[in-house]
Image (tube, rainbow, N blue to C red; front, side, top):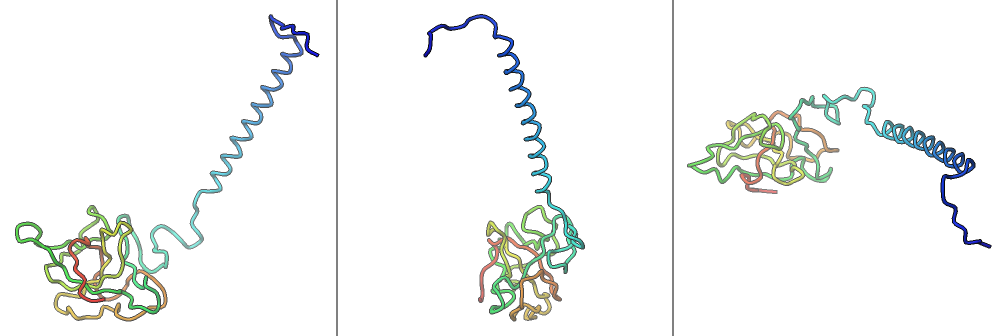
Length: 179
């Protein structure tokens, strides 16, 4: 039963000891919480598997350097050609673009490794996530009908390592011809 009396003034010694003990317990809990969070974040850090470093493609076949993204073939599965479509370079304007740059990765800042003219035939093998770029394999200009080893199925997806040049081109300048 409450007496309705409200105590005013400084807290008693017993109350001070209880308050200090609670503060100490909270401080100790916070230290353990920070330690647990630090350990959890350290456990999430990515580490390379033995024999796996940042200069090798996931399948180990093509050395990488900053700004290079190898064209992958066989993404349609073993029942389809390694590169599923044939395309041609189009829409190069006489007053603007004289050629379509072939790049090492799917972005404008990537190194230009070739120049494709209007009508140039190429194999379309993959696309960038945003669909703005296509990974292509380009037969030599003097042998436009060369197969480039992409017209038949392969067992599993991998980086292209065939006899022809490969790289990335803007989707806006490629028209499907077959596939």
